[in-house]
Amino acid sequence: MMKLIDTIRLANGLDMEVWDATRAIAADTVRVELIIRVGVDVKPAYFQSPDQYDACLKALGPTVVFEQRKERSFVPLALGYNVFRELFEEFKTNSFEYLSRPNFPSRLVLSRFAEREKNSRNFQ
Image 1: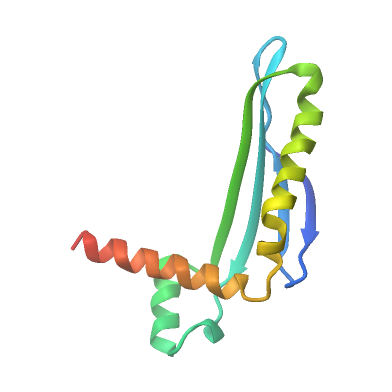
Image 2 (image 1 turned 30 degrees about the horizontal axis):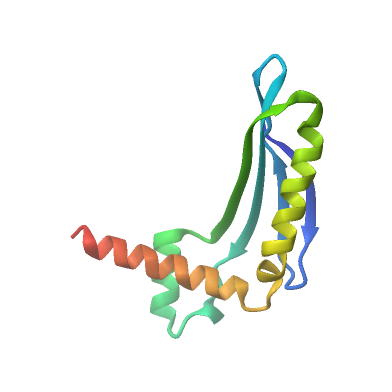
């Protein structure tokens, strides 16, 4: 079962959710799983034309979610909390600045839309 640990307001105004999805593997071991989620609203300002904006809304919906998972298996039960904190600190060191950038929301939306368009052309 996932548990929301914290919601952090980023410098660009987005909210980053920190989830703990740790679960038992055996009586004395756990699989520690950190999930980071950031929802980004699809905005007309990200697009060159209203038609592109409408196509993106149709393809992706009003919100695009960035999600990253970090996990470690077979962690002794007594060390689970420490490993979770370690994974979160590693995430902050490697990715926090990137998610906080002013252009992160538009770049994420445009990237996901371009990926969706490319994939839909490949299957036509």
